[in-house]
View 1: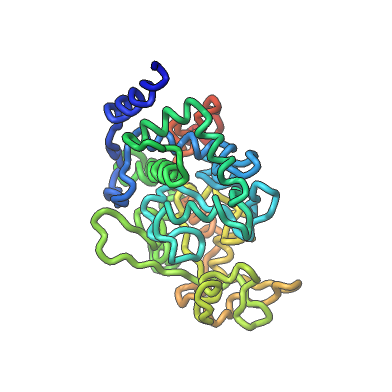
View 2: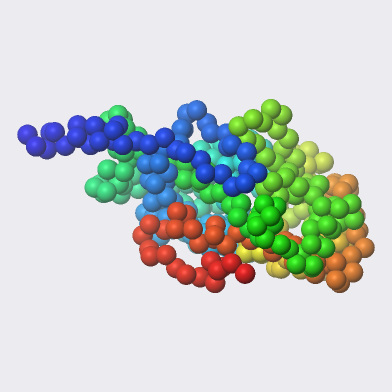
Length: 380
């Protein structure tokens, strides 16, 4: 008799305690746009945080979402290329998740993925490459790991009140998406400077002027509040989703990029889309290296050198070619006459975009481990 009453009690508690999410936004950030099919609640976000850091959410139980998206690295992994749960190397570099709620498209080069819920299916169920490694053969087994866990059953009931079978794949995806939408980063030195709470030093100020000026012209692709050129929020009407060839490669002078990293071309097969990738946000860029879609540039200093050169010349090997002459390169990528001081100043400014409170926030950390006081947590 008691056992029969428990589910009803859980449902009643869930309905009574499900809390609508209240945004606490950084200064100058617009209200995010949230899908009507997946409204935000505190219980859903907390469930998503647990799932994000739980390695049981992979086919072989060895890898979590956080394996490729470490909070202390602004939710990147520090690798040149990501590695999936079966050990397969991904052809692309793990992207950061800071302010991902403001992205209108996801991954490096797929304009068709326009919600976090859609994107989530790629790492969970994708087979080429294998990331989380969930397939028809183990799908039920992985789900049973959570439906058989008393704490998770309680959390799912709270996050999805009134649902008789709350532990399901749709809800796993919705909960993780809800958690990811809370990953807001807007408390860097630069942000505090805008609010009059801190001052940039001379080098950082010169770098800011270069970044937003017509000499370096970085702002054309990284000029929004999120330091990229694809954004969406609650009041957006027209949303632009550009992708760019930056002259990273030009195989044999043909304009080609190495397979399978050929950008938008992989989907459209249009020559003008060869090597076109989404410009990532530069927030926390100090800790998200190595850089570019394939992690082929190691340091921020090298990134600045690359853009100052107007592209990259590869002198030997299978990727040889002068990217500066790539016929599909964005017209804004041209040689910039920057001396050593100006290059150092740009790097100094880019480092002001590091949000140390974001990197070590307890709200964004693993619920299964005690908080770690890392050097990145301490503001300069």
